[in-house]
Image 1 (cartoon, rainbow, N blue to C red):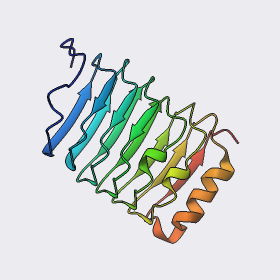
Image 2 (image 1 turned 180 degrees about the vertical axis):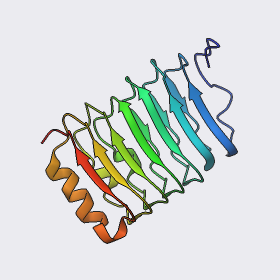
Image 3 (image 1 turned 45 degrees about the vertical axis):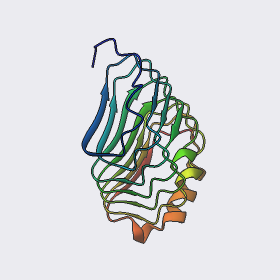
Image 4 (image 1 turned 180 degrees about the horizontal axis):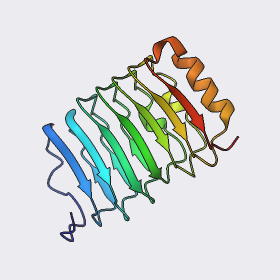
Length: 171
């Protein structure tokens, strides 16, 4: 955080993070950890320069996956991710699609997609089979309600353990 760190070169050898991978307020443009297979929590918050995240081997997040206020973030590759044990939150990014999450099958607690004005395609989440608690997709200006309904149908309302909320989307 705020150390003028512009890259994470040298960390490519990391294979597992037992605790939290936390990127906040940095000037890093790209995060690539090609050998990482798992992480406790994964937070990206208030990153004004971050454009891409690539963790293609991560298959399990044992806690939170939380991307918040990264207005330039337009590319995410978590293509091996099958399980998020707690929260899956994507909020205020420049993502247009979520194909980088195409292997995701289960979320233990909440799925939140909020205030992603560029988001138009959520078919990358069609493999989700269960959400333990709430499903909330709100204030995504360019995301059609019919696409959200299709995702809810693909998951199955009976496979969502709590409240389903959708409002303020593109219509």
